[in-house]
Length: 563
Image (tube, rainbow, N blue to C red; front, side, top):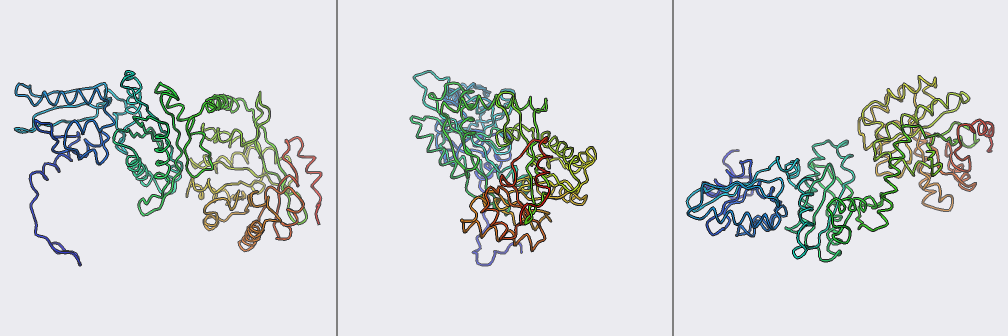
C-alpha cells in the first residue's frame, strides 16, 4: 500500500534530497568516470564508474585528497599519477586555459579530461580509450582490468629504473566449474558467478594490486611491492580460500574450484611474457584432483612445459595421420562367465614413445579441442570391428563431454552404424556423471534418442560422482559400471562390500544390469558372485588386446568358464 510503512517499522517524514545527493546521482548516469575536486585538491564526489575504471577498492574511494586517491589506483603507475596531479594543479590556477585532455603511457587504455565545473570546483573525467588498448582497458562484464591493461601494467612495473623497482608477483587463477554452471544453470548465472568471484578477488588484494579478468574463467592479480615470495604465497592462499567458498547465485548454491599459479619477479623472470608463461606453468601443475590449490613456479616445470608443448604438437599430427588404434577388453556375464562383448579402448602409437594409454594423452586432447574428432574416430572403428564378431557380442564405447555439446551425437552414431552394418542393439555407449553435468538436458535428450533406436546406455564410474543417484532418476540407464576403486578392496574391505551390496541391490530393484570394473583376483570375483553382480570386466577376465587378437579371446571365452 503506497504511502504506508511496512508492519513493524517506524514511519519517517519525507525529506527532499539535497543538492549533493542529486549531484551524486547524476554522476552515476554518466558513461565516463568523474572525480570532483577543489583548488586544494580535496576530493568531493567519486562516481562508481570512476572507481571501476581506476580499479579502486571500496576504501580507496573514500579518501580526502586527490593525490591519495590516484596513488591508490593499481591502474596508474607513479609517473602517470604525478602527471595527473600536476595537470589538476595547473587547471586550478587563475591563468589556466579551458581545460586539458591527457593520454598517459602509465595508464594504458584510459584517457583523462580536466575541466572547471563551477566556481571553486573542477572535474577529472576518465574514459576508456580504445585507440590505446584493444580491450579498452576494462573488462565489460566484471569491471576489472582486461588483459591489455594487465599486460601493460606488468610491463611498466618491470621496466622501472633499478632504484625504483620493487618485487612483483603474478598470480594466474582459473575457476574450474564455470562451464558446467553455464550448461546446467544458464549463462546468466555463470555471468553473475564471475562478477561475484571478481568482487572476492578485489577484497583479497591491497589497493595497490591490480586484478584483471584475462579471458573466460581466467583471472590474474599483479601484486606489487613483493619484498618476499612469502607475500605472494599468503595472497595465493587467501585467493584459494575465498574463491573456493560456496556462492549463492540466483537462489542456487554454486561451488567452483580455483587453481592458481604464481611467479615472482625477478627470481622467476624479469619480462612480462615470461612471468605470465611461468605462472601458467605453475597453474597447470596444480593436481586435477585437488579441491582448489596453488603452486609456485619451479625450474622443473619449465622442462615439463616443453614436453607438454611437444606432446601437443605430436598429438595434432597423430589426429591428422591416424596414429591411433583400438584395443578391446572382454566383458563376461556372471555367474557363468559367458562372453558378452568388449569395451573399445583407444591407444596412441607414438612414433618415439611407443604405445601410450588414454590417460597419457586424452586430457591433452580435451584441452586442445581434439576430442570430438577422436571420439568420432573411435565410434566408427569400434562399430566396424564389432560387425565382424559373432552376432551376440556387443561393443562398448566411452563418450567424451564434447561429443554431446553440439547435439550431433545421434546423427554421428547413426552414420557409424549404417557404414559398418552393426545393429544398434550391439552398441553400448558409456557416459560418466561429468558428461551429463557438462551438457545438461541436451545430453539426456540425445541419449534418450539413441536409446529409442536400440543403442544401450551405461553409466560409467558409478559411485564416484556427487549425484549419481540423481542421474538414475533423470535417465533410464541400461547398465551401471561400478568403479574399480570400490572393487579393489574386495572382499576384505567392509565399506567396499557394503557399497557393492547396495549397488547390486539397487540395480535389481530398478531393472538395471550391474558390471564390476577392475576385477583382478579370484577373491574379488567370488565376492561379486556372492552379491549377485551381473557382469565383470578386468585383468582376471582378460587384458585389452589389439583387434587382431580378439578372435582368440572369443574362442577362449565362448564357452562358460565359471560355475
